[in-house]
Length: 266
Ligand code: SAM
Ligand code: SF4
Image 1 (cartoon, helix red, strand yellow):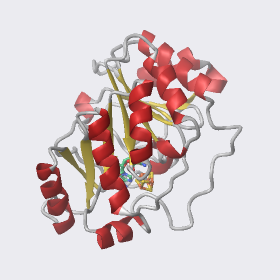
Image 2 (image 1 turned 90 degrees about the vertical axis):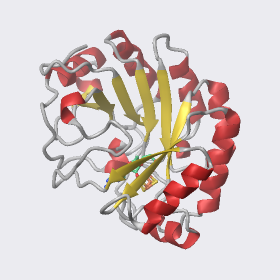
Image 3 (image 1 turned 60 degrees about the horizontal axis):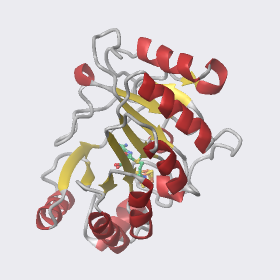
Image 4 (image 1 turned 120 degrees about the vertical axis):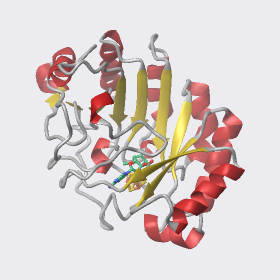
């Protein structure tokens, strides 16, 4: 499918939960956020139906994100349901890696192709500060497990404050070089202030080439991360919500005053 600006839309990012086992400084307040109630969170069946319709409209790349997707019960069942849909050429998941050591073999077995893992520091003290309590060793074990399981290429997402020359970022880069991992630097963004730039080493942030739709954990199809527009699958029906999102995809990002990273998934 093409949108009104002749961009081909082939990538769907799905946030399956707004819950998380970390509290990264730039993403979540320490006390957490008011959580979406269980009856509003999409069921796995609903998500799989959205993916089926989206593939029918030309989506061939799917990513599961969150919140932290690995904290949602039975995530491997959803992975298997999506993996069974013919026509998906690239099927990934973005995780903080904390629970990945246990999940990597299960996710591979269920049909996931690859993982992106967020890692902003390798120094244990800095990692604990940035995530408000996370243990970087668990992430490192998760990365090793993902490689062993063949969830490759394993890519690392590293959020930087100012530049990829910062100490934490340089240390993560060295770690990636030593461990044969691809790295992408993401500049810290602000949805409500419309601050975004392109991703170094990735393809996000360039509006003229944007191919993405997003599905929030409560069932809204969002045509743009930096916009308030969202089309509710339960109110409009899945196909109509997808079509409206494609037709109304803005030319450029502006501001998003409704969502935050942990409920839209980045
Ligand atoms: N919990 C998983 C994780 O951390 O990878 C998946 C969800 S998280 C919201 C997805 C990505 O968004 C992560 O790579 C995270 O670093 C990034 N992110 C969160 N808040 C951000 C912000 N304010 N600016 C830029 N990236 C952000
Ligand atoms: Fe959780 Fe990911 Fe947000 Fe960190 S960036 S608080 S791991 S959702």
